[in-house]
Image (cartoon, rainbow, N blue to C red; front, side):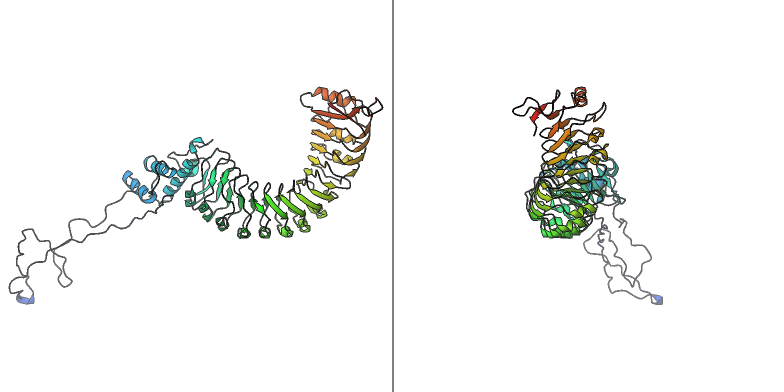
Length: 542
């Protein structure tokens, strides 16, 4: 990295003029009448040039001027002239740059193709140089969009993805999904007003320059879905006390742990570090960051249990710890997280029950707690009017389905130990929203609620592998227009598959995928539980 030097406009130095002292007259000076002195008129030795008089002494003021004829003021310097601009470029930006490097190319562009100058200080030159280094370092010629870059226009308003603050200095680079590659240059740390670096979903590799963490106003750092390597939680990260959003998920970082020093990021609202091979426990120090609103740490190698102190995160809205080796139970303090909207605990090893205090989570929108070892009953979510996704698949949950409020879109309780009837309200109260309804592999009994036919957006209805009985409710023309799959097999249902269902399937051949029923006869009889002329797969009923 080259050294960026500030412009120094010092005063010009003035050279003293060499003078000749007059020779003293023989016999010295004589007093004239009135007491005045008469100067001697002696001549110098061996010097034919005209003497230059010395400045007068304090005691003898001459009556003629002895000022030199050459001006003592420094020559005027025009910072906007080609020569003046070149002088400033060399003074501020010159360095030992390797030929062909992004730094050398940026210096050449500033010197020969740009017209910015340092008349108002060196900031503009430095910022444009840093931005051009960034452009060359990240394969600017291959960016999806690069309007304005490397043009003689204002980088604050005309270079795509660059924003400046009220002080005219760069405070954001936002180039998400823009085909950036290469590496990030450490020169970005020279953009002292930088607040937001948002480079989500590009192909940037190499290690993240630690110098960037020293930016005094850095608030939003988003490097998600790139190819960054090295260690994520380096010591320098914890010097960035102004950070509010740290998004580093889906890179190639080398793992490591979350160190206790993370407690120094006291302004942090978003901690996103998924898919980075992070191991070890979640330290209690994370729970001291009471400003946190979201933690996304799925698909790492985190282990042990969720800290009991998680209840301190009273502002937490989004929590995703899926696909880790986390064990133990959900802490009782979890009930304090009343602002939660999204809980994702998929494919973990959680045991025990789901806290009944979740009934107080009035802001809940999504609960994905599938593929664990949880038992007990499903909490009452009737106080969560915005809940749209409830996925509890492959646990050991017991009891019946509680009342679910409207707005439900995705309901999945497959492969548990649930029993009782399937509530009619689940369909009738969500007739405009319900898309997916999976009840398979439980011990549900009773009949199929006829209200399912009113669900205009229902795509999948899986009722297989239960103890359902009675007949299959018929549908009318125009019912369940979005349906693609109906799995009714391996139950105790009786009667034929209704003609209305077969007519619907025939009318949407490109949309409909599967209709399963118990349309194979039981051993010793040639009569199936459900006669079906349109099923895609037949089973033997119970």
